[in-house]
Length: 266
Image (cartoon, rainbow, N blue to C red):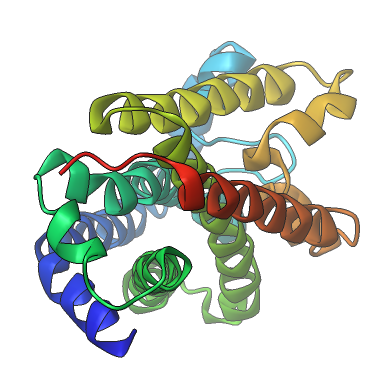
């Protein structure tokens, strides 16, 4: 199993580097941008106030966390971090399991003396390592660029707890992507299916945020489980942590069961 993990880490190094660079550059750009805006937020806030709420939501601007405060600026950046992190999680969860059939290497891999469950576990280990690295880079980039630029190093605990929430949500989308890879009969359908689930949940999250009276629908969108303003103001929800674990376990159990009996294309 260790050899499979090592091989998967080596094979998937390039996409990890690409997405990591994107995440780190986003953090650096956000830090430089917000630090340059210090002292001129009054004009910016006037423009923001004229925006419809749904437009502000699309830019990661929340009424609970004013944009002229460092915590509001971090929340805005966290919105964009999550956008990238969840998309990669949904894609990679499907990609890493369906890739071998797409590249016609499944016969070589599954002919080795490993159970399918062990191969799947190794691939998932690599996926979760990728998610941790991406989340860690978002946090490191924030602490290195944004917080010093806006003079708010005291927000490090908030950065760490919201990053933990983001990582948990990434794991949900990895599990969903893995399930899609076992249910769909082609690589393209698996990836598109996983991305579609993410896109739908993103749209639902935007609708919920724009309408203050339908928060009871949070349960159908994983993006809302660890919503940045909610975590900052109230901490990690005691309801959503076990729900997240249950969803991940259920999705991976179903994926494992399907993976044992599915036909593999060489």
